[in-house]
Image (cartoon, rainbow, N blue to C red; front, side, top):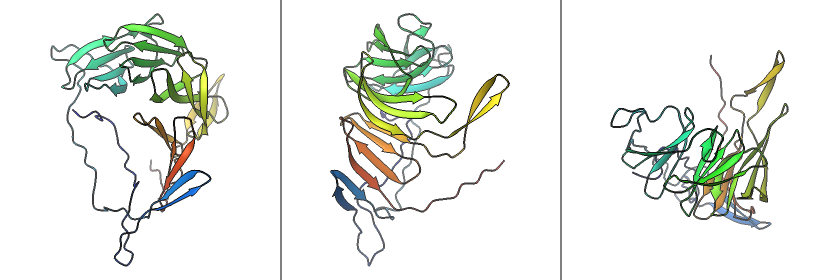
Length: 276
């Protein structure tokens, strides 16, 4: 079973591209400005007829081989070096572990607020040394487990941190959300495992919301198709990738939070219409 199971891969042209320009292959233009390398790809890709095809390899069903229900409401997941998959179950606040053939192995944690317990499983991330790192949104805690599922330790987060993009054995790079009646703020920061901030990559765009007051309370509704930043992490190089969401651009940051590469491509915007 491939380690990228269940992951939707967005393929963007990063290298040479083909253009019908006097029968020659048009190459990407590369230039360096103020220490940042810009890679300008042509509009036509090098292999315009090639496509990416996803094939189903395995289905994780709600019941195991004995008929016992294991998965109720699966959420975030991750895969270890042996292709075991860890799935956070939002229904019973536990993490279910399955092998590469879909066989249930064990459950990590349970619902609660004590050591090794969860109230709202957020992101799940495997550290290089094999430890499992889990963020509990509601209690603002980060919990650590051994590869076998034994609870090791936890620390209290000082802010509302969410998705993890990169991690070492002593720190992690994640997303901080600041919410309120006005437009939410979105920051990417690196913290150590005492909750102390080590560096900030900066503030990035968040999906647009409209606040509606209802009686004594209020509700936030997402505006459809509003542009927002998208992120990805290269765990080998510890690079952070950022796409603004409103232009065809990839920004690449190194381990120290420095922007060192930009990759772009000309394109035509496609109008979006909503149908009821």
